Image 1 (spheres, one colour):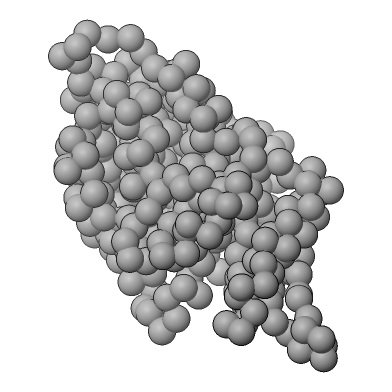
Image 2 (cartoon, rainbow, N blue to C red):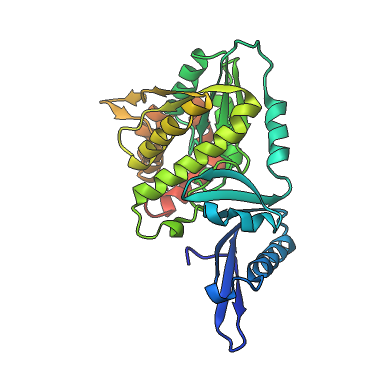
Length: 323
């Protein structure tokens, strides 16, 4: 088992023995397992049906499942379709609506019409919160292409809620005429839902590496053709091995798909301290507002002084460890 699922289904044999199970966390079906002696009994379909039934009863209409590539075909018969694959480790499938087709329509509706030889770029950001580092990345990317799409991760697993993060990115980039800020939908794969139990015994770095390649493949499958992206910009990562691993994944996956990758040096303040959202949160927690003011633009600072921003800051102070 991994984490605490919202609901689990257990299938019992004639003597009450456990012969199959599956769980639902959010809208992700995970931890599916059936006893080898019972794998021809149709238990997987029954378990998935029960989980979907419970999910729909709670208001869900769209579901994901991660599985090994050699098991993906089994889920097609249950109504799932594959949207990304990284051999030989993991495949991501979905069912229900609104799904990838509807999100692709949203992306196409956000696309800015340009000439055939125009260069469209993208950055993908979480912005927890929006910092001068994010602003510099967007400004630099925008100066190197005809139009830049800023994709804000929509999954709400951050200290700052998506609604506020999205607004901060729009306000902090409003001076750039060739920038469009868009949401990621559910198509920025979250480490919180990635099934690390597939990789039992693997290091955190190995799991992050596979997660990153699946995520970048999904980006290449969906965002690149829908928006006509030919270059992706990313900040250098000198400190965090997990983020560094993500950059390496982009170098591997994107160029063969016709997308350049340009790394932009991170901006620093004071005595050379690299600006990062995690440090901003640490400084909020420590009441070091002098450092916060150095690292965030005026728009973010104004938000932090608002009632909504103060409420988030208080939650950060009450929490333990890093976010």
